[in-house]
Image (cartoon, rainbow, N blue to C red; front, side, top):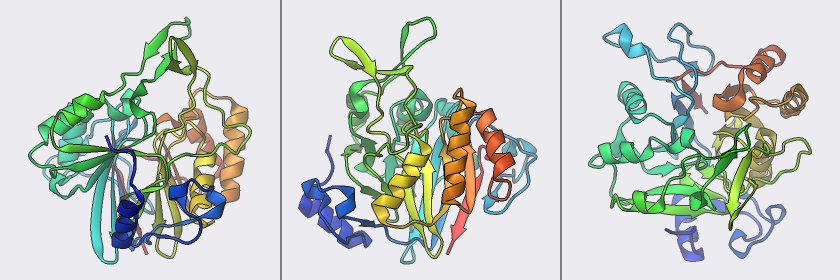
Amino acid sequence: METGMNRREFLTTTAATGVVLVAGDFLRGTSMAQGLVKIPESEKIVITVITDNLADLTLPNYKIAQRHVGTTSILEAALHAEHGLAYQIETVVNGEPHSCLIDFATDPQGVMRNMKLLNINFGKIEALGLSHDHFDHQAALIEILKAKKEEFRKGIPLYVGEQFFVGTYARRPDGQIASLLALKKEDIEGLGFVKIVEVKEPNPIIPGAYFPGRVEQVTDYEKVAPNFVAKKGNEFVQETFIGEQAVILNAKGKGLVVVSSCAHRGIVNTIKQAQKMTGIQKVYAVIGGFHLTGTTPERIQKTIVDIKAINPEYIVPTHCTGFQAISAFAKEMPDQFILNTAGTKYTIAG
């Protein structure tokens, strides 16, 4: 497993993709305040939600959201939904198209059916990424890799955050500890065509799309839920999700696009990290799981207040955001809110 890029590799990559460090030097561990990452502007961004918790084949297209419809049969519009999340993210940078897959949900048959109906071209996928090691984001990965081995590119990188393979757990209401089904590095590497890359700093996944590395927790209310624990030696301690990733993009002429998976460290923290990392304050769209399910009304309200202050053009809560929080966003940000469903494609063009 690689653990990020050395200096020469990083400079080669940034030269190829147009990424520029305008100040400071991340490779020497300087703080974010000393250096900004210039994410190349994308002339076009397409975010396809391959699967999510909700499916609804009756919803119409709405603003930047295009709903999936069947071409030959109404059954083709009935996509698989589950407690899981998977994305395809496409960018066009300097006229060149790029594509990656981020997260892979839970059920391989259901996810692969959606991928087929959504016309995912595995031969054009340049990179894979996993936001964090919870079953609802990665359980289907191995079976998908096996099934599509001949279609994926040889040596395709799989980007993960730090401490990804150490295992992760949840404490049940009865006090019992349950594994959240961590992936094993050797199972992935044993497939023979995937190169694992660990991300600790801002890192391009494809041109125009970045993992941020660490997300700083700057709000006072976005705390990791106490039921999530990690194993340290023979003891279980509070999980921090220090390695959880989101995807940060820069839409030409519009601002940042933040694509979250679960945002265990806080969706507001994630947005603020994107702003701090890039120096861009304008946020065009926030899409993804905000992990507000089961939380308090107070935290939901504080989150909405802060996101209203950030003032994105669009807010698309998915997956683990939870019914109460999704309803609150719909009520309090009606002009910006979009209800997500499995198979929805979000197109942002400059």
